[in-house]
Length: 125
Image (cartoon, rainbow, N blue to C red; front, side, top):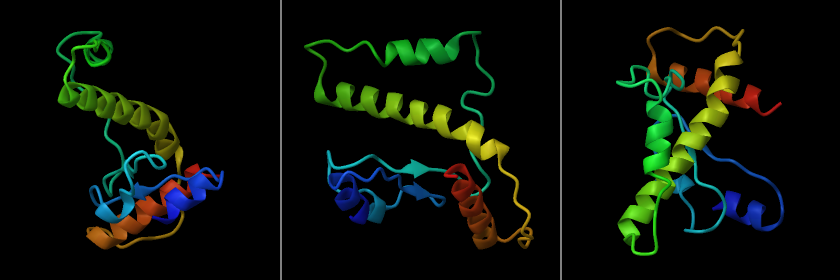
């Protein structure tokens, strides 16, 4: 994957998908960063209706506490969930602040994806 080669050469890279996780963006395990996956309409607020006040902290705490006898599946789950939450927390405010001045056709799935690409590109400036 091109992003892996650039990362190996010291260039910071990020990969984004606006239509689910894409195999072509996955790359080699342990090489580079994992992809950001967004919907074509943006990033929803994580856990918008928590059942307790500090639920986000509880989720992070439960998935951060692993021990020497934690299984591979548990370690992988905790790592991926924590990584996903961190990426969501990092990217959402930037995407939410973007303004798209270009007119895109309404109700068109491909146009919605291109509009999101425009918003993602704005976060990199």
